[in-house]
Length: 272
Image 1 (cartoon, rainbow, N blue to C red):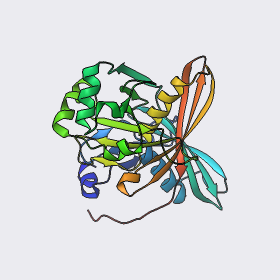
Image 2 (cartoon, helix red, strand yellow; image 1 turned 120 degrees about the horizontal axis):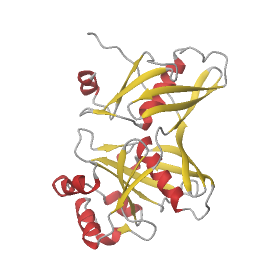
Image 3 (cartoon, rainbow, N blue to C red; image 1 turned 120 degrees about the vertical axis):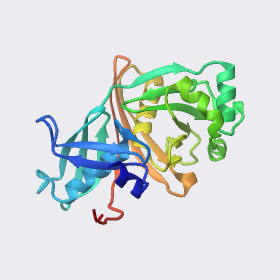
Image 4 (spheres, helix red, strand yellow; image 1 turned 90 degrees about the vertical axis):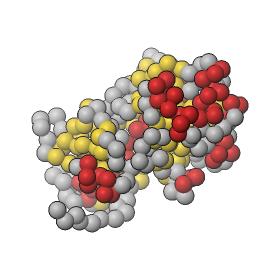
């Protein structure tokens, strides 16, 4: 699996195996070119799309169905919307509850983080939250930036970032801004897998699930469903539109979902 993943050299590659129990439709393993990961967003969306497209049992004659994948992080449910028998939209529910790590709330922390991503300290906003770890199955350090200009200038200095892999417990940073320039978009972001073979990802469902969960904790209302329209990959020339939805009850996050329109891009065969 790792050899095939390295040959493709995509952000992630999934492998579908028979289910091991009745609580799932398939076992899914996800690899980056460097390692296996317990959960990721877009690989699940793509896997559900392809399985539905090739006639995975239970998809015929329906306008909507849900596939359940068993992964290292738990069960990932993916709701697939069909049109004329073909999948057109997929939405997953994160397999784990939102977990927030400690905030990097020291002046030195913010200054060092800004330097590590080629920004000035004032480019990192701390009014809503300090940079902090967030996870719904895969951890990311999340930081809010001042505007789109700061977002476009953001570049990771690998050597400086290594300190933060120790401080945050992960090697991925997800930066975002509310300055989107579009009324129809709430958040614009970038995700850097700073020490991996794929340095920037054009669309990261797992990171944006964690971000949406964090944003929902900042909402004043103690309960409700909060929707966030997210754009990623613009700076790479590969814009992606994501729709996140978070359920909150009595101040606690109870579910995080993310999805979007899905289409096949390419197909091929490997000779072994």
